[in-house]
Length: 291
Image 1 (tube, rainbow, N blue to C red):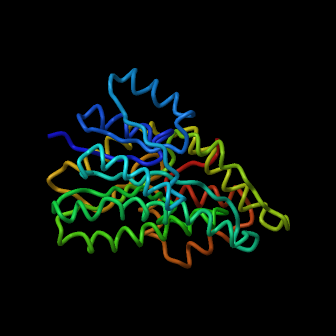
Image 2: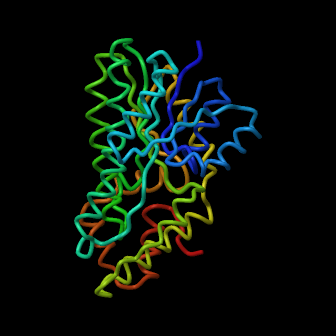
């Protein structure tokens, strides 16, 4: 019997690549999108790959939309979802001093609560069958507090915490939890993530370094299909692990931050000269931000 997988945010980037890759591995894939009318590229890429991705229109930010979408999926699958890939998400740039609280709530509503809405739809069935996998796509920003992205970082750190707790909660039921931590991949999200709400002008350096990081990352961005392959491995391997760093900067940033003291982390932020900052960044993380 084919594995039934649901991939949220399947219209672009990692979600689209994962949906197509899992379908190519024989999964019956349902990809959620906010608008069926805007899913032309997904349909075309799936057709080129010779696979089918069943599209379901839903907005993970809205309770009723998630319930309705999953009702359609479960009706078609006889109530079975074997793998849920919580991929859909949004960015969010701002320093804490100048970030409206509502922006934190909006980003968390999508990046954290959206995943919760989806997993609550599939976990009762997984528990009953005592099998299944929940794949939560967080970010390197869920382990390393990226500059000037306070709402995004807050949402991804929260998602990491939820996922780590979820792994223990679901272990008695034979349900696998996987945390995927991408660095920079080729994705439309970066073209949209250009806000720099620097009202005071006091945080020019933080925003400059943020965009320099993404400029370097995009110059070396990983094909999102590599992330899809890691996800397939994570849900099929007989020796699973909880976390999988992947893509440009994934291992380097997570390992580099773990090797730093908190004092060193704060001292890096205090560097006033960009060249000094980039040199220190390269020394600690092995990534060259100069492009």
